[in-house]
Image 1 (cartoon, rainbow, N blue to C red):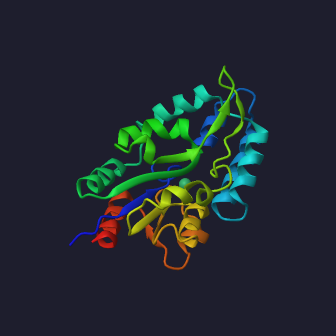
Image 2 (cartoon, rainbow, N blue to C red):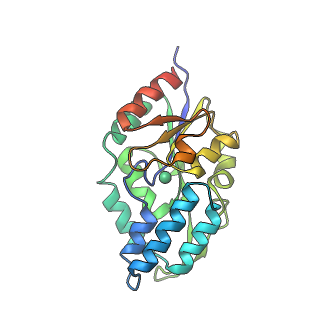
Length: 222
Ligand SMILES: [Mg+2]
């Protein structure tokens, strides 16, 4: 008999091939190549677990801030550039009675169009929320836990997840959900980037493609 479980999907470098904030800042006027190298390094260190997520995000936003409009436009673009097979996996999860959530360190403006394309509703799409001026300039971050970590942001929502809960992602922030006991199993998603501290963690199951992830989920949720 199939158990009705929950799959918690990372976004950047999992559901899409890129890091969305890096891409948004690469298109921001006044951001140069040196800035982008810094942003890339801060992102990598956070995802490898060398630097807390909140410190990385704060340091990145001190270099440059995306506008609300640029994030929304990027979200529409990424809705058409999902990882091959991602949509099939989510469709299969829903058809077999499982729940799919997106839990991301990206801005919600970026997440919502791809979530809609995947058939994941906004209430199951969790990420960083900005405080915006009337003309869409970033004033700061909403203090709802996500500005610190995925664990902090999703702890309350996780009480509603039906078990087993499987977390999927490429980064240390994803692995941390299992370490906090919020997910039962962890799949390291390695198609776009393989981070050794994550993929090589004890009991992490590596998946190299959405097809491979599908097979892993069939086993874990059977
Ligand atoms: Mg990621």
